[in-house]
Length: 198
Image (tube, rainbow, N blue to C red; front, side):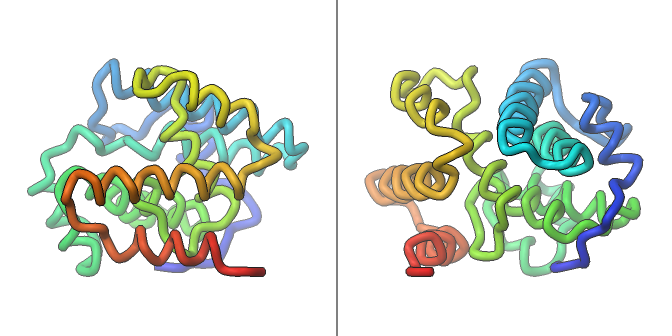
Protein backbone atom coordinates (compact mmCIF):
# COMPACT_ATOMS: atom_id res chain seq x y z
CA UNK A 1 0.00 0.00 0.00
CA UNK A 2 2.96 2.37 -0.43
CA UNK A 3 1.78 5.43 -2.32
CA UNK A 4 3.41 8.70 -3.26
CA UNK A 5 3.43 11.45 -0.64
CA UNK A 6 1.27 14.41 -1.66
CA UNK A 7 2.69 17.91 -1.44
CA UNK A 8 -0.68 19.27 -0.25
CA UNK A 9 -3.02 17.89 2.37
CA UNK A 10 -6.37 16.37 1.41
CA UNK A 11 -9.44 18.16 2.80
CA UNK A 12 -10.17 15.18 5.08
CA UNK A 13 -6.69 15.54 6.58
CA UNK A 14 -7.09 19.29 7.05
CA UNK A 15 -10.47 18.83 8.76
CA UNK A 16 -9.15 16.02 10.97
CA UNK A 17 -6.27 18.20 12.15
CA UNK A 18 -8.97 20.49 13.60
CA UNK A 19 -10.71 17.56 15.29
CA UNK A 20 -13.42 17.07 12.65
CA UNK A 21 -13.68 13.35 11.97
CA UNK A 22 -15.20 11.89 8.80
CA UNK A 23 -18.87 10.88 8.97
CA UNK A 24 -17.84 7.21 8.80
CA UNK A 25 -15.83 7.35 12.06
CA UNK A 26 -16.96 4.97 14.81
CA UNK A 27 -15.58 6.42 18.04
CA UNK A 28 -17.34 7.26 21.28
CA UNK A 29 -16.60 10.10 23.66
CA UNK A 30 -13.75 8.37 25.55
CA UNK A 31 -12.11 7.23 22.31
CA UNK A 32 -12.35 10.72 20.86
CA UNK A 33 -10.74 12.14 24.00
CA UNK A 34 -7.83 9.70 23.54
CA UNK A 35 -7.52 10.72 19.89
CA UNK A 36 -7.45 14.41 20.87
CA UNK A 37 -4.67 13.77 23.41
CA UNK A 38 -2.62 11.88 20.81
CA UNK A 39 -3.20 14.70 18.32
CA UNK A 40 -2.09 17.25 20.93
CA UNK A 41 1.13 15.33 21.57
CA UNK A 42 1.85 15.08 17.85
CA UNK A 43 1.02 18.75 17.33
CA UNK A 44 3.32 19.80 20.14
CA UNK A 45 6.16 17.60 18.90
CA UNK A 46 5.84 18.70 15.27
CA UNK A 47 5.98 22.35 16.31
CA UNK A 48 8.98 21.68 18.59
CA UNK A 49 10.70 20.16 15.56
CA UNK A 50 9.90 23.33 13.58
CA UNK A 51 8.19 21.32 10.86
CA UNK A 52 6.36 23.25 8.12
CA UNK A 53 2.72 24.04 8.87
CA UNK A 54 1.44 21.51 6.29
CA UNK A 55 3.48 18.82 8.04
CA UNK A 56 2.16 19.85 11.46
CA UNK A 57 -1.34 19.49 10.00
CA UNK A 58 -0.55 15.93 8.88
CA UNK A 59 0.78 15.02 12.33
CA UNK A 60 -2.28 16.37 14.17
CA UNK A 61 -4.59 14.68 11.67
CA UNK A 62 -2.83 11.35 12.21
CA UNK A 63 -3.53 11.67 15.92
CA UNK A 64 -7.21 12.26 15.33
CA UNK A 65 -7.66 9.63 12.61
CA UNK A 66 -5.61 6.72 13.95
CA UNK A 67 -8.50 5.28 15.99
CA UNK A 68 -11.38 6.56 13.85
CA UNK A 69 -12.67 2.98 13.38
CA UNK A 70 -11.46 1.50 16.67
CA UNK A 71 -14.99 0.85 17.91
CA UNK A 72 -16.31 -0.65 14.66
CA UNK A 73 -17.02 -4.41 14.73
CA UNK A 74 -13.92 -6.39 13.67
CA UNK A 75 -16.01 -8.57 11.33
CA UNK A 76 -17.05 -5.46 9.43
CA UNK A 77 -13.48 -4.16 9.28
CA UNK A 78 -12.05 -7.50 8.14
CA UNK A 79 -14.17 -7.32 4.99
CA UNK A 80 -12.87 -3.82 4.18
CA UNK A 81 -9.11 -4.14 4.58
CA UNK A 82 -6.57 -5.30 1.99
CA UNK A 83 -6.14 -9.11 1.92
CA UNK A 84 -2.81 -9.05 3.76
CA UNK A 85 -4.36 -7.22 6.69
CA UNK A 86 -7.47 -9.40 6.89
CA UNK A 87 -5.53 -12.04 8.87
CA UNK A 88 -4.72 -9.62 11.71
CA UNK A 89 -6.36 -10.04 15.12
CA UNK A 90 -9.64 -8.12 15.46
CA UNK A 91 -8.38 -5.50 17.94
CA UNK A 92 -5.80 -4.18 15.47
CA UNK A 93 -7.83 -4.17 12.26
CA UNK A 94 -8.88 -0.55 12.77
CA UNK A 95 -5.54 0.89 11.60
CA UNK A 96 -5.52 -0.81 8.19
CA UNK A 97 -9.27 -0.15 7.87
CA UNK A 98 -8.84 3.59 8.46
CA UNK A 99 -5.97 3.74 5.97
CA UNK A 100 -7.96 1.87 3.35
CA UNK A 101 -11.07 4.01 3.85
CA UNK A 102 -9.01 7.19 3.52
CA UNK A 103 -7.33 5.84 0.37
CA UNK A 104 -10.75 5.11 -1.15
CA UNK A 105 -11.82 8.66 -0.19
CA UNK A 106 -8.87 10.09 -2.11
CA UNK A 107 -6.11 10.48 0.49
CA UNK A 108 -3.02 9.32 -1.43
CA UNK A 109 -0.31 10.32 1.06
CA UNK A 110 1.58 7.04 1.38
CA UNK A 111 3.57 7.87 4.52
CA UNK A 112 0.42 9.13 6.25
CA UNK A 113 -1.57 6.00 5.34
CA UNK A 114 1.28 3.71 6.45
CA UNK A 115 1.43 5.52 9.80
CA UNK A 116 -2.28 4.94 10.39
CA UNK A 117 -2.25 1.36 9.14
CA UNK A 118 0.62 0.26 11.38
CA UNK A 119 0.32 2.44 14.50
CA UNK A 120 -0.60 -0.47 16.79
CA UNK A 121 2.13 -2.99 15.99
CA UNK A 122 4.75 -1.03 14.09
CA UNK A 123 6.22 -1.82 10.70
CA UNK A 124 9.71 -1.50 9.20
CA UNK A 125 8.39 0.97 6.61
CA UNK A 126 7.35 3.55 9.20
CA UNK A 127 8.99 6.92 8.75
CA UNK A 128 9.21 9.76 11.23
CA UNK A 129 5.45 10.41 11.29
CA UNK A 130 4.65 6.70 11.72
CA UNK A 131 7.10 6.31 14.57
CA UNK A 132 5.83 9.46 16.25
CA UNK A 133 2.23 8.19 16.03
CA UNK A 134 3.28 4.79 17.42
CA UNK A 135 4.94 6.59 20.34
CA UNK A 136 2.17 9.15 20.93
CA UNK A 137 -0.54 6.48 20.99
CA UNK A 138 1.42 4.60 23.65
CA UNK A 139 2.28 7.73 25.65
CA UNK A 140 -1.23 9.19 25.79
CA UNK A 141 -1.25 11.04 29.16
CA UNK A 142 -4.70 9.60 29.85
CA UNK A 143 -3.35 6.06 30.10
CA UNK A 144 -2.96 4.93 33.70
CA UNK A 145 -0.39 2.15 33.25
CA UNK A 146 3.09 3.14 34.55
CA UNK A 147 2.43 6.91 34.48
CA UNK A 148 5.89 7.94 35.77
CA UNK A 149 7.73 5.92 33.12
CA UNK A 150 5.44 7.26 30.39
CA UNK A 151 6.01 10.81 31.62
CA UNK A 152 9.79 10.32 31.47
CA UNK A 153 9.44 9.09 27.88
CA UNK A 154 7.19 12.06 26.95
CA UNK A 155 9.78 14.40 28.48
CA UNK A 156 12.39 13.04 26.04
CA UNK A 157 10.22 13.76 23.02
CA UNK A 158 10.61 14.77 20.26
CA UNK A 159 14.41 14.96 20.45
CA UNK A 160 14.85 11.27 21.28
CA UNK A 161 12.21 9.89 18.89
CA UNK A 162 14.30 6.93 17.75
CA UNK A 163 15.44 5.95 21.24
CA UNK A 164 11.94 6.31 22.70
CA UNK A 165 10.44 4.29 19.84
CA UNK A 166 12.98 1.53 20.50
CA UNK A 167 12.22 1.52 24.24
CA UNK A 168 8.47 1.30 23.66
CA UNK A 169 8.80 -1.41 21.00
CA UNK A 170 10.98 -3.44 23.37
CA UNK A 171 8.50 -3.05 26.23
CA UNK A 172 5.61 -4.10 24.00
CA UNK A 173 7.45 -7.17 22.73
CA UNK A 174 8.39 -8.14 26.30
CA UNK A 175 4.75 -7.82 27.33
CA UNK A 176 3.64 -10.08 24.46
CA UNK A 177 6.29 -12.67 25.34
CA UNK A 178 5.47 -12.58 29.07
CA UNK A 179 1.77 -12.97 28.24
CA UNK A 180 2.48 -16.05 26.13
CA UNK A 181 0.96 -14.48 23.03
CA UNK A 182 2.13 -14.67 19.43
CA UNK A 183 4.51 -11.93 18.31
CA UNK A 184 3.19 -10.60 15.02
CA UNK A 185 5.74 -10.63 12.17
CA UNK A 186 5.42 -6.86 11.63
CA UNK A 187 6.39 -6.24 15.27
CA UNK A 188 9.53 -8.35 14.83
CA UNK A 189 10.44 -6.66 11.55
CA UNK A 190 9.82 -3.25 13.15
CA UNK A 191 12.14 -4.12 16.04
CA UNK A 192 14.81 -5.34 13.62
CA UNK A 193 14.53 -2.14 11.58
CA UNK A 194 14.91 -0.06 14.75
CA UNK A 195 18.07 -1.83 15.94
CA UNK A 196 19.71 -2.18 12.52
CA UNK A 197 22.85 -0.04 12.33
CA UNK A 198 22.50 2.96 10.02
